[in-house]
Length: 314
Image (cartoon, rainbow, N blue to C red; front, top):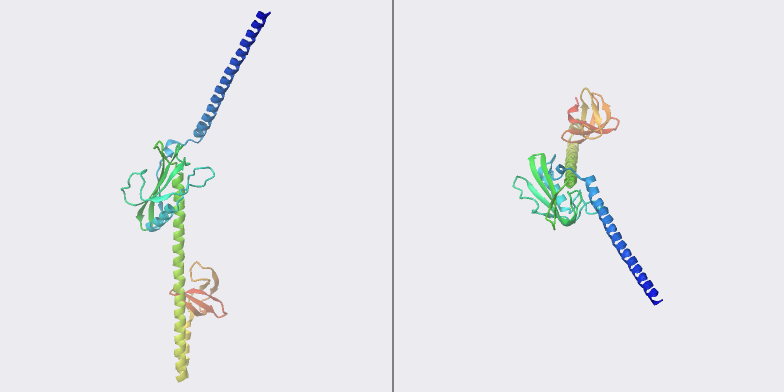
């Protein structure tokens, strides 16, 4: 009876041990299968996007160069402003970002060879950038550098060249740009140039208005002086007064030349027409500028006529 129990115990022991070994082997196989599936999954994530979005080799590293219709000094001002704003357009570290911030203006960068050709060179550099977008195969932290070269072509045209590269800190690998940074930085520079051109145009227009105001004030002073002389003459002779009044009338009044003229709303050829004036129409000069007269018609309407379209009273 004891032998039977012993055999039963041994049999139970070996069966239990077999089950334990089987469970252990099954757990090992499950772990190996999970690792294999996870590896394939990450490989798919890494490879598929690269295959779908991979750019042709020749699309990377092309230097950006363009001609801007502005003098060199204006382009230099615009580039200086963009370099010092600390923003690198056309790239980002994370999808929520619009651009890369905290770039620094520098005099040089080891990521570019020394510039030996004519022109003024600027650099904007940002360190510790994590895999910036629009650079070829970036997967590490490193330095992003942008170089701007400004060259004068003639008095009104300037050549602008922009290059951008990214260098990894660990592998020291330099990655070429696909042109996104260069294009975005150029747009920012062009916006600054347009703003400078607008300021210059407004300054010229303001100077023109100032000259017109000075001419009007001069005419007023002359009119006051003439009136003072007329008053003094009136005290001595009525005849002299009448003659002086006639002189003033001739100075202030004009007649429209043939075949007639347009009464303008402003002292410009492109200004809108208020009305047509027939030849021989008399007008009174209210404001005089070098080329235009501000006049009043017989019925009290005010406007502008070019001085070549008027002649003195007969």
